[in-house]
Length: 506
View 1 (spheres, rainbow, N blue to C red):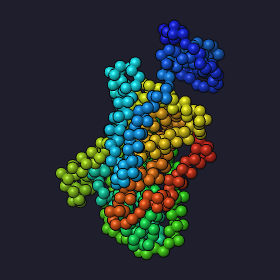
View 2 (cartoon, rainbow, N blue to C red):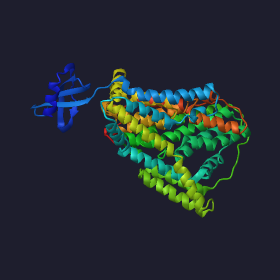
View 3 (tube, helix red, strand yellow):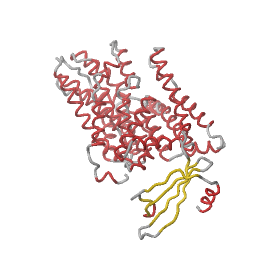
């Protein structure tokens, strides 16, 4: 420490800022009473802090050196946005290529961004940059996230679509015709929570929604939008959703804690959306809803995963139970053969490969951006705009929503926002589980209404394949859940007081 201090004095730095901080707790029960920062010729911020202990005895000066932020350090993110968002919009809306936005290789876009990050800061050798990227990728949370992604893919591959169809048709078979659209919303909530994927839920339920609209007389846009809204409910809450996995592992909190925090935001929004759907449904004249066969036994794996997750069982154990029960049921009932199941398991895991690769590349890119001071720039800007703990929570939400609008992928947005949000949570005193909840919730709000988002594009494609015409804006006019979720989130942040038990860093 003394050598560092002497080196800083030798560099003849210039004092840039001085001020007082009161009641700021530091390690070993010392209080930071006075600080000042100086900037050395190497572009680093030097922090000196005078500490006093509880007995009012001076501890002395503490010397800290950290990278000074420069706006140019954020250039890799700009390159990614231009490459991915720019080309995506051009192909989707100018060239009119169906699903053109998702034809842009996101992995290549991140590779281009990493190349730019490597070309920056030439004072750092390339070998050291590789080491920095390796440290970012080797983080425990990243490794855990990757393994959970693969396990979740295996589970979906084992149970297949038939199990989710049984859940949907079971719920639809027990309701009067006038409640058909409301039940579509509820079914989508449960199925997406069990499956952990909004896109998968939409793919599964949109054909059912179209059939309900045709046979009952309800608006097709209302039926499809209800499925989309319900699918985002589960995407936000599910224990095997990649957004939940990414948010919890990035912030270092337990999934059950995030679920409990998130549930009281999502439930009021879902109830409000359900009420709006019922009001609109009662104004229309329904006919006869569809009836389809279902198998109760095939619902068991999803129910076990849902119950195990809510009970707080370790996520790997929950997924293992789901995989094992699904395999026994599917093989025992003759729904598949051993070799077909192994093939399906492989397909399920391979479906997660791109998500895993994106998580790896984002970790590498963020490690370089952090070293170059990019996060310091973002944090400084956010601190200027958002004040206090509540402002910090809103800042976390806006950050991930903007990244989601740019990438049209809420999982990627969460992974990109995680390091910055982690630092913000520490600066503003926000608990990890609340930060994870805000990341997941606000990313789902934006993703649920994007006209170029995967959920919207898949829904429209499924409708068109069935011979119907429906635009994104017709669906958006009937999307009630994302709007209600935004209102609920703002009330959660600014109106409701923090719960006492939320103050612990769990």
